[in-house]
Length: 431
Ligand code: NAD
Ligand code: UGA
Image (cartoon, rainbow, N blue to C red; front, side):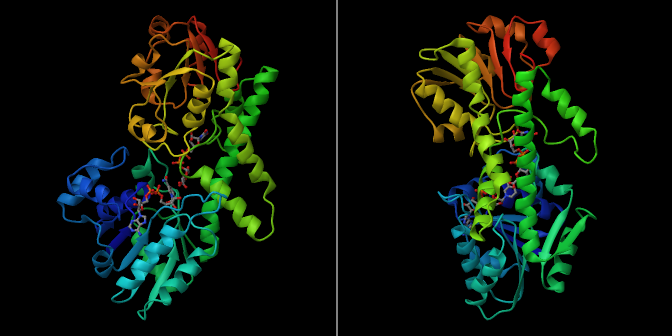
């Protein structure tokens, strides 16, 4: 099939490449000229494991191209996929200006029947609005569908090629059939449903996962006070198939470009129809507080943080990505700076992106995990990059001024800690 994907970000680029890998002809469009020139030069503007090689293969096979010219890409496509951003507005509502802008450009480039698919996460009713918007600008007939995306950053290629399920929201059986054919090579688990339910499935899924995280974080906070171990509690809970073991890792709360904005947007979607989503409001509140436990524990260990040197391991909101949107590290580092601390920070791939959000003469940007730890009064592990677990605690002790570790991701085992000299503060485990 001939596809055009509008928005070559974490979702659009990965989806476009994976559809090309299935044998489709794909044009990825982005209005950001720098992104498209990088792609033309064989560079990948985001860090995502496995993506670079897959792009190279599909470009070489002539199935994948990149452009800033939306009109020509749309003209040549049977299926147009909208994968532009839907960030939060200041009140929490989803900003639909990019999706509406893209829909207008598609409408103006129509030259025949096309299926127009929204992959971006959009509030319930948005696809109906997109339908009206396009219909008001073109006389060509077209179909609209909601096919929400469920990939995770850091494992986006694998998630796209082996999804748990594909949800196709479409009111027109022809549109549903075309999209089933497109997605069939990926999974047999395809759910076809109505458009509004598809839009809601996306928000409800993210909100539920966020709820699991805030739930286990609250259990962790209680565990700390009653002397239980949240990792054992989560393991024991997860053995019940009705609960499931995933998304029960206690830590410093969820970040990223999705859970924070999508929970806020769902609260707004409910509020717009006079429904107060109390449970989800609490999930958000718990999440906002969780990251600051790192500071509380630092103060418990060091007292006043004025003049202290604090090491930070991990700036990305999760491992295997360079995405720093809503990363807990940002709030934590800002608070440390306000408290008068000096920071030595390191992330394997996200430092350049992070420095665009926060730069200060009080922060030393280290080139390695060991360099960040040198001379620190305490070290905070904020993202569970695999390479951090490879640094032995004995070696770390020699590098640091004091052997104090705030492990926000429960990376080190009880045994490792017992054999070390570290004053070790983790999340929801006996200190
Ligand atoms: P992103 O910010 O990485 O990429 C969006 C891209 O769209 C940008 O490169 C931007 O330049 C481009 N763009 C905006 N308007 C355009 C236009 N009119 N024409 C061409 N390009 C345009 O965003 P993302 O993280 O890929 O997310 C996209 C959507 O997918 C969001 O709605 C998000 O909620 C959803 N989503 C994201 C993830 C994820 O893990 N990032 C997962 C599932 C769903
Ligand atoms: C999440 C969802 O998992 C995807 O299904 C969805 O498509 C995506 O949002 C989206 O809508 O954009 P992502 O944000 O990339 O994907 O990453 P996750 O693995 O879900 O992690 C999100 C955050 O939760 C991270 O900060 C992570 O550290 C935290 N987390 C996750 C925990 O604190 N505990 C857990 O048990 C799991």
